[in-house]
Image (cartoon, rainbow, N blue to C red; front, top):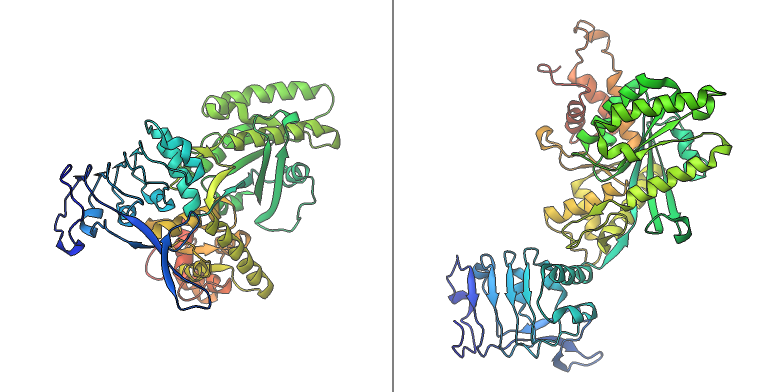
Length: 516
C-alpha cells in the first residue's frame, strides 16, 4: 500500500483483516497529531493545543487509527515518509509488533513513553526524524538502530512510563546447623545488637556500603533484609519454605566439627539450589569458631579443613570455590569480618538481572523498579505493623492486596502478570513470603511475618492426637486436629485448607485417607 497518496485510513469498523502480519504504508499522505483538550481555570472557554513534553493526559484528533483486529496480529509496520507529527496511540496496543519503521518523518519530535509497552519490538528505524524528547533518546535516534540501541531506548521509555526508580534492596538469608554461630556472626557482621528472641526467623535491616578506597570494584551500598533462620533438625524441614529465589545466602558451619560437618553442607547446598531453581554464585560458605582452636593445632586444622572442603564442595559445586571463607569470632578477628563483608558485597554486586522492566541486563543491586512497587512495599510494611500492634494473624489475601494496590495513584498494576511482578519484588526485598505451587493449589496467600508462619508449621510437626483419637496408628493425625492448629494460629475457614496444603508441600503432613 505504499506510494498510493493515501491520506486517510478506513474507519476501524470497516476493517476485517484478522491475520494481517505486515503492513507497509510508507510514502503516503497520512497525517497524525496528538492534541490535549484544555480548559482554562475559572473559565468555560476551551481550546486545543500541541501536547507538551510532560503532559500526562492526551486526547488525539486521530487521522490514523488501527482496529483491534490489526493490533493483535501485526508484527511489522512501516509508516515512513508521511507527514506524521506524533505516533498514533493505537500502535501502543500492538503487543506482537517486532518491526516499526518511522524513517523520513521530519515533524516527529518526540517518542511517547507508551512505546515502551512493545516488549517484542526489536527493530526501530528513526532516520530522518528530529527526536528531541526524551533527551536521553536524542543521540540514539540517528543512524542504524542496533539491538543494543533499541534496548536502551525501550529502557528509557519504560523508566518514564512506570516512574522507575533504583532499588538496592535484597534479601540475605543466614542458614546452617544448630549452634554453628549464625546469630553471633550476624551481630559481628552488622555491627549492631541482634534480637535474641527465640523465634524461628529473626529479621533485621542492614546497609552494607563500600567506597572506592576500599577496592571492591563497583563502590556503593546494598540494603540487605537479613533473615536469620533457626538451626536444628526440627527446623530443617520448616526452613525450606523460607528459601526463595533471587536472594543471597550465607551458609554457616562450625570448623571444630571437621570432615563430618563438611559432608552435611552438601545437603544444605542442594536444598538451597532445589528451592531456588539452580541458583549460582549467590551462596557464601562461612566457617566459624576457628578462634576456639588453640595453639599449634589451629593451622593444622585449618589446612586440613580447607583440603576437605575444597574436595567435597569445590569439586561438586565449582561456582562456590571462591565463596568459602573462615571467620574469627573474637574481637581481634576484625580483618576476617571485613573480608566476609567484601566477599558478600562483591558477590551481590555481580548478580545480573533482567526483567520486563529491564530491556538491558543490570546489576540486581541497582535494578530499575516501577515506583508503584516501592509505594506498595511501604503500604505492606504499614499493614504488617497494624497486624503486629493488634496481634492479628499476619496473613494477606489476594483481595486485600488488590485493594491496597487500588489506593496507589497511577499504579499500572492491573493484569495477573503485573501483580505477580509486584509480589516478586516484595519477596526479593524480604518483605513478604508467598509460597506458590500450583500442584498443591497454593497461589494467592501472602505472609507478612515469616516467624509467625514458622511457628504455625512447627506446631503441626509436634502435634499429638487427642484422647478420643488415641486409637489412630502412630504417625497418623486426624485432619480436624491439624485444622484446629491452623485456626488457633489465625487461619480462617477460607484459608485453613491452604494451611493443610502448606504442610503437604513441605513434607510435614501428607493426606493419608479421609479425615486423616
